[in-house]
Length: 70
Ligand SMILES: [Zn+2]
Image (cartoon, rainbow, N blue to C red):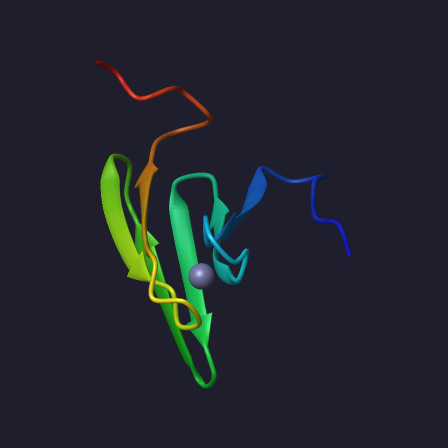
């Protein structure tokens, strides 16, 4: 399954590649078992602890794929 037709991007753990969430534009949806969380908002910073390897992953939700401003 590839979902590259929309502005959709899978967010994976840096260490073990577990799927942490799915980003669509400026919203990030995180799903685990029966729970689902949606973070919506430009410039939001989200930190997730990987449920498999406990790696701390950070993502910054920016509109499109603009690189982080220095
Ligand atoms: Zn991991």
